Length: 323
Length: 307
Image (tube, rainbow over all chains, first blue to last red; front, side, top):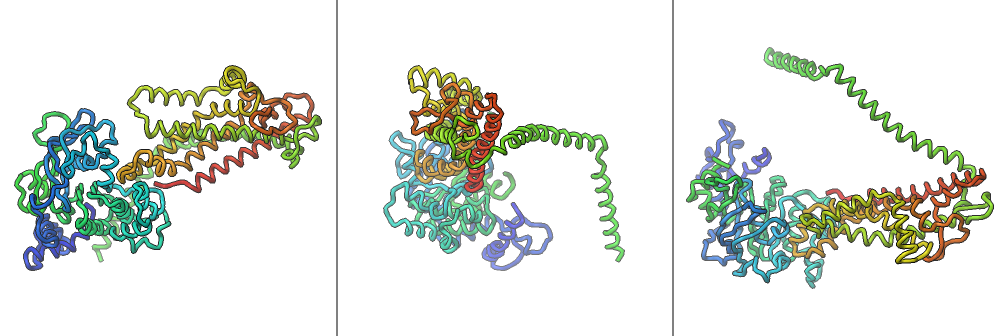
C-alpha cells in the first residue's frame, strides 16, 4: 500500500476512532511506532467496518432480501486444473457484495462466472449451478449475450473504447436498439456516474484524454447506460489513486439503491467501507495436490466478518496476520 | 557547527567512493563497445551506399530527359517524343483492380484468423503457416500460375488488365493478410471484453470496435503491399504486360503495359536515347512510390491510437 493511500485513510481514521471511542486518543489498530498521532492513524479494519455500517444504516440480513445469484457447488476449471472449487453462497439484491482473499484464490474467476465472461476462455469449464433469479445461467437455453446485457461488468484496468466520451456511453444503448433519446441516455448515465459536470463540455473528445479515475467512472457509466440488473466490478480501483477510489466508492454506495453490485477487491479497507456482505475465499491449506484451488471460507455480513469472524483463517486474514 | 560539518564530509566521501566505483570500467570493455558501435555504422553505410549509388545513377542519367511530358505523353515510335502516360495509366488500372480484390479478401481472412479461428485446431494452424510461406514465394511462380490458370487454362481471360490484376492480387494477398492480422491483434483484448460485457455479439464487437480501431494499421499495411505490387515486373511479363503499347487501357479487358515492364524493355534496347528514357522512367516510378509511402506514413501518424 502506498504512502498516499495512507494519507487519505488518515482522515477517515480519526473520524472512525473518535466515533468508536468517543474521544481523539491514540487510535487502535496497527501502530506506526512512536510517531505523531496524525501519521499513526491507520484505522483498524474493525473500526472501518463499524463506521461504514453506521453510515449505511441497518445491516442487510440474509433471508430478508431477495436472492440475486444462488451459487451452488460451483467449480471452475481451466483445462483440468480447478481454479475455484465447491463454492456455495447467495448474493443478495440491492447489496454490495465484496469478494476478498489472497491472490490466486479465484475471486476473478468466480466473478467472471456471473456474467459468463469465462466463456471467452476456451479452456474454462464450469460445473455446479449459478442461479440468477432462480434461472440457471449455464442452462442450455441461455444466451450468454442476453446474460451480459443484464449483468454488466467493470474491469480492473479502465478500458474505454477509442472513441469520443459520448460514443463510449452510446455504444451499448445503440447495439441494444434502445429507442429513447440518445442525448438523454448519455446525460443520465454520466450524471449517475458523477461524471456529467466534469465532461459535459467535452463529450465529443476522445475518452483517452481523461484521467484514469475519470476513465473508470466512464466505464461504470457505460455499463449503467444499458440499465443492467447487476454490476460486477473486478478490482475497479486497483489502478487508481486514492481520490478517484473514494469517488468510485461513494458512487457504488449511491448506485446500490438501483443495482446490485458485486466487487472483487484486494483492499480490505475498501471491502469494509463499501460492502454489505463479504465473501472470503482462500486457497485451501489442506491441498495436497500441486495446483492451488480457491474455496469459500466464510460468507457473512461485512461488519461481522471484520469484527467477529467465525473462522480463524478469516480473522487472521482481515487483521493482516496472513495473506 | 561540527555536526553538519561531519555530514558534509561524509557526503563528499560517499560521493567520491561512488564516482570511483562507477568510473572503473575496464579499458578492454570500453574499446570493444566502441568497435561494435563502429561495426554497426559500417553495416548501415554499406546498405545506404548501395541504394544511394543506384538512385544517383538513375538521376544523373535520367534527369536531362525528365519533365512534365513524361507524365502527359504516350508511347511514341521516337524515343525523344515518348512519355509514360500509357504505362502510368496501365499501372493505375492494374493496381486499382488489385486493391478491389485484396482488401476485402485479405481483411476478411485476417478477421477470421484473429477473431474466430480456434488455434487449437490443426487446420487453422496449417492455414497460418501456409500464409506465412506464400508471402515468401518468388513472384515468378505467381506469374507462371497466372499464365497457366488465368490467361489461359480455366479462366482463359487472355492478356488483359484483369489477368494481371488477379495475378498480382494473389501475389500480395498473403502480405495483406499478415499486415491486417497485426493491426487487428494490436487492438487490446480489453476493448473486446468491454464490448462483449455490454451485451454486444461477437459480430457487433468486430464490426463496431475492432475493425474501426484497426483500420489505420490495415490501411498502412495495404499501401505497403500495393507499393510492392507496383514494382513487380517478372509475373507481369508472363501474364501479358506488352512491351510496346501506344494506347491507354480503357477497361479491365484491354491490353496494357506497366511502368516497370516499360522500363525493363527500354533498357534492353540498343539506342542510347532509350537508356536515358528508361532512367527517366525510374524517376517517374520513384515519384509514384514516394507519394504512396508518404500517404501511408501520414495515415499512420494521423490515426495512430495510443492504448
